[in-house]
Image 1 (cartoon, rainbow, N blue to C red):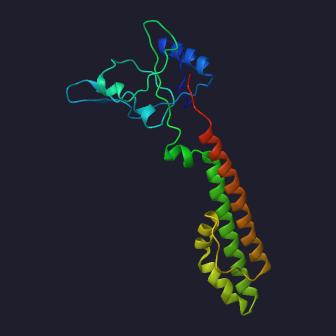
Image 2 (cartoon, rainbow, N blue to C red; image 1 turned 180 degrees about the horizontal axis):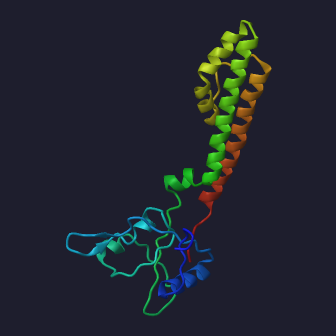
Image 3 (tube, rainbow, N blue to C red; image 1 turned 180 degrees about the vertical axis):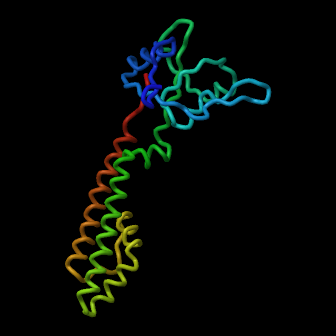
Length: 205
């Protein structure tokens, strides 16, 4: 552990990992798993594949006997290297709910989208508050109604649904229309990313 990062310096497991990364063409990023192994009441160890099954890691190196309950969790593919050691892989599920919706965008992009909506909401409330202070127009009541339902408006915009009213002030209308336009762009990008993810096969070998 160097400066908070896991560094592998050598050993049989590292040699196997280098061979696998070369065959499958991926970059190795080491992590420290948490709670990945447990001791059963009879003293044996179990849970050596939990990092892989829970999506914490993409590749897990462990040595154990291939007994029945472990075989049920594996999808056996062609062996990459023949010797005393044999490597098997569990193919990731491409059509799970997590893969379709949540991994279509990266976590940073989801955070950027959430930040964008928060900025729209804060700006909307700020402009509405300023309008109350400087205007004594009858239109204020209409904008107060929209402001009271601003959260519902965000939800309707994110789901591409219409809304039954709109602000009367030009500044608020600009924010309103900007949110609608941003949603349309986000929806188009999300749809194309999702279709691309579903149409590409993830063959490990």
